[in-house]
Image (cartoon, rainbow, N blue to C red; front, side):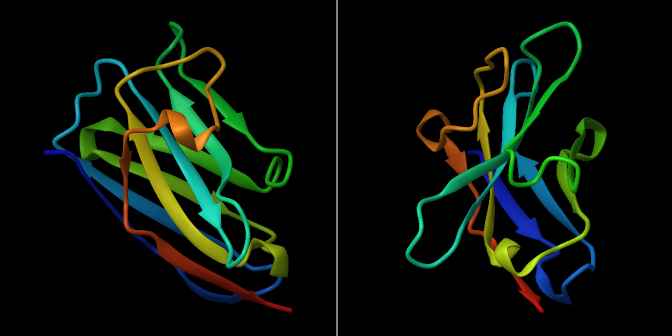
Length: 128
């Protein structure tokens, strides 16, 4: 049974940083796409970063809203997905979710409908 558990959320002032972690268990990393999404109250879920094995080199994709500020990474030995978030802004306040699929696409896809497994989320609040 696949399980994803996020951690690392919290409250931070604008301009600060946070690192989110997502422990992935029961999942095969032979072919994968892992991603971070976020959803604020009253808004649609937004895909912000994705990493996969679709090509010979690991492929990464970011949404325009986080490019240059957020970094996604994966430590397969630790079964852990990370999201390093820098220069946080009030607009980044949201519930953050990690998601996984045992399929991969080139380039990585940020559509929530394509992911099969989801964590429960971790809250990030940025105060200005």
